[in-house]
Length: 124
Image (tube, rainbow, N blue to C red):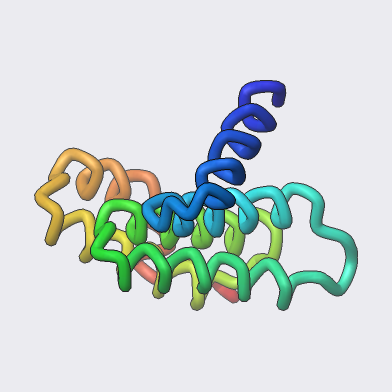
């Protein structure tokens, strides 16, 4: 956890020093922190933070970071919310982005990790 706090501080300082290349990282880190510290009825806030991280990464041209944000959002949706339908959407989005980026090893890993979700075998 100490390393996370140090990275958060470094990124925040870079952002304060007007480095626009870290905004999407700060956004994703904020989403991750919110997901970890989620209280009851804060799901909408966490979803917004993840969606912001995805959008900022994609708009900035950081395809791999947008894919990572979608992958992390899908994990949150599966583990904490139980929203299999939206999780599938984000897994498929992450796979598409990783494919566009040429990260076929990651694509294969995601297909294996989420094969049940991608096959639609969830009852939710």
